[in-house]
Image (tube, rainbow, N blue to C red; front, side, top):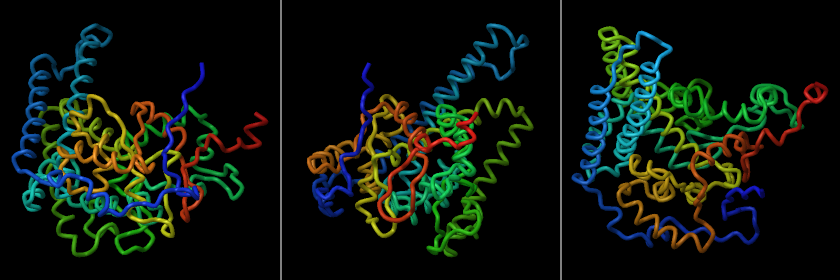
Length: 409
């Protein structure tokens, strides 16, 4: 059976016949003005809707499940216990991702006309999910300002072959290059998915993975760029009070979780909060990873990057039923990156207008591949770029020859 050809972005900036890119103003002109209207009531409705769903799941789990392990491990009771709590964790994590997206809207100013109101609502929702609201608000704004910029970008900035352990002639010398060879293609792809979805988010917040290359001052980072220290190189001095407020909120939530764990047991807190929290983290990293990664989508050095180039490098993807829970953040991501101040409940209408305008020019990225297949393909093909200058494309370690030692074995 013939293998179906993978999706490719229609825009290739290296093509001499590549179309001239429109300005942000030209794109905005095709979008109905009402798409930019922000409503307190409409936004709060979705907070209430998601909260009712979360409460319903808590009620169902409390009614039908016990936090006590069954007395006989090898039994049908244990199987039912495992299935029940895993179903709760998955769907609660899915619902809480909706709250996460709404807090993200607050950070962008898309939740309501009042940024003070946005910050209050966003702070409560994000801090409850152990997200440092003001810290992430700042770095995420940088992600939007410098999308697909290999030097000034923030979060999921591609690493180079050298940073992945490749030598000047693509010799496998260290790090991921050697690890990939030892593990094999499939196992390394699984490892990529695990590191992104399971540990990627906390490592990013701690400044240990996937950060940008430069600090707030435009200088190369020389230390951990975490989201918690007021003095972190991520943030300018004038932002330190807000970072302190975020970190204080995180400390308060962690303190509450510790107190509940001491009172009711660590397993109980993990089942009710920890496991759904991990699923929420997985979803948010998945969206950022998939909406900005593909072997056919360009990444730009500072000499080639423009804001419009970066924004139009974003990819829309279908997420099926999860669009309902996650407020279509993945299927309307192009519109979101072009106009982050637009409320999500208008993004469908805006996306239709943007698509009608950009698609005939070959400038709209929509990959119809199911998200789980796209995730697997990206885990296998998007490993590094060759340089941080010019126009770059993701390369795969699968295309690098094996070392002589491996060949002899």
